[in-house]
Image (cartoon, rainbow, N blue to C red; front, top):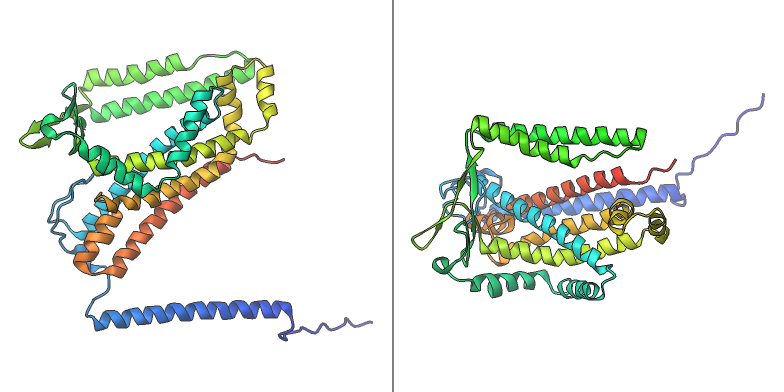
Length: 392
């Protein structure tokens, strides 16, 4: 019987595989060595300066007030509470800017493709103007040149004695909890679920028989009727806290401070100019034959855009749109320039200065922005995967 030839393994440096593994091991060791040196150096420097490390400082009392807080906060609360206030304020301005920038960017992007010459040129001027001005300058413009020049509280702009605009902010009525809140919410949820079920039933009926049934009249009736019944049986869902001028400022309701308003407007306008170009490029990426096919079927332009063009364009729009949403979250840190109490201003600013825990505060702040960005990327990627074309 013939013996199998023995294969000699080459472990010499001349072997490309061995050389590749060796380079990777050297790189990993070098990175670990640098990290170890930095950690050791940091620990020694902290010890020489008498600075204790750790997160125990979060349990100390803050001792300072915060202009805007979505959760209850007093000066006697801890730094951990300050962290929660900064986090909620950052999430608030990010959510507002994402919503407003998306709506405005979508509208401007469609106007950029309009057949109306004036509308098309105005949208082009809008895009080229706001996307080429740094966002920090736009924040300064809205804050110092616009909002700070509004009249004082006694001469505030009045809207039916319900909403007031002054240089102290926008004051609007705010709902408060009432005994009928939960029945109202349950009735509204049932109405929405019933509307969705009705829409799916009518959709299946249309696919089977070809007969189109309108869903919106029954859905609108459910959404209006069920909460109205809950209101009649269990009382009002909310009590409205209306702002009133007391002394030198307004009390009650909800206030949108000038810092929040300036930041929201500036970032929304700035980011919407980029989103508009994303929308335009996504729509133009759809083959023109799709539009011609829809017209040959007699579909009007709004229906063609809504049912044919945009669903296909979303597959191109979502990836760059995700980047713009991430930019909004990161650019919200510019709030520190005008004193809006976000994560950077409160936690990486005031808390760091009072405690001296630079490493911990900066690490926590960086981790927060990283987690928020990763969550946005995850949600957008899930949506993108859902609408992606699946090849057979």
